[in-house]
Length: 464
Image 1 (cartoon, rainbow, N blue to C red):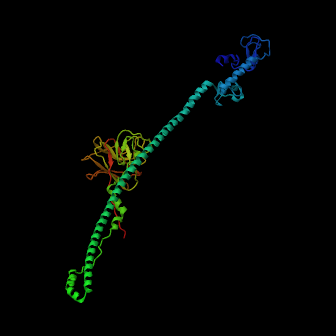
Image 2 (image 1 turned 180 degrees about the horizontal axis):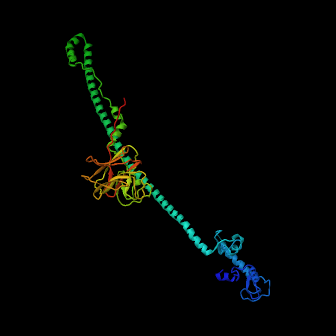
Image 3 (image 1 turned 180 degrees about the vertical axis):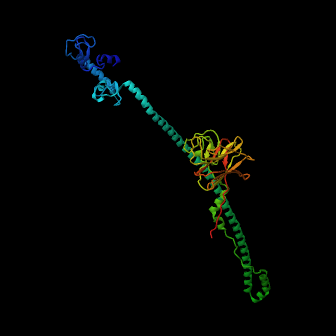
């Protein structure tokens, strides 16, 4: 029903929907309870609206109006079941601050709410909405954080697939090179075996042919002489001289001997075969003492496929994982160390903005590090050394560096920098390192910085 209909169905005394309405002779209607309460306070039974005196002390019930009111209340309850008091079927117009619940005017005057504080529904709703909104703000912020982390997890999941695909491709390329080397090595060794087989087979063939010729000649001489021996005496004597000469023309040869070293040198071909191949593989493989960790690289740093060089470039779409630096353009080595001595060379070339050194593994990687970093750098044509949180110190070098050597001695607490091309000492930082250290490189130039490979030798010790 419309607002005007609700007003028409409201009692002029209580301003609420009629309850048990009765009507007076002046045709005005009121709640039965409201009318009797009104008359008790007055000396005359007058109409609360028009003041006309009523002669009836018990006015008749207005059944039509009662039915209309009940229908209206039923419809309103179906539309908004919470709008009416469950105890009194009155409209909830107040809010009890003590019980923290909406109440009707009848509830307000009941024993349940004696000395309680009340506010109009609209005022209480406004205040509590503001309070709830303040309480909701941390949850909304938390939701944004969850959505942000979920988005990063989704990005990380995609990045994992890309990483796996690229890594698999590079693994296959490396094994393809190794298989090519092994195939060439196999072919070379089989070729050497067959060449030896052919040479020694040829020698044996020539030896056999010579023996066959000598055997045939000796057989012919023996057969002819034996025939002379079986001849008659006169014939034997006539041919004796010739027989002797024939034997003398065939002097006794040395006894035939088997050739030494005639067989295939199997030990040469098979002895320590896998070790010899592995040792020779040093010519086609390299060892780099520091391998860069792409998961730590700032988004602007681009690493080579073999993870030994780094340059600055366009920002990459990479996950915001905890290991990644997001302030300085830093990339770490994949492994740290907490004891011993460690050395590696970095080719800086013509890069105009670089830093190399070590940092503590616990350094916070989000934002600007404030301590736990030791390095030598080059910027705006000037070399400097720094140990955070201290300020940089300028270094004056006679020659422009193309390579720089970093040497860490954790037992002695020294970090040294030198020029390997001239074997010249640059600077040494003395510090008591209490944390695990990790090599690091920073590069803000498009020209790459590269960690150089070292030669590895194999020493075989014979046990006594």
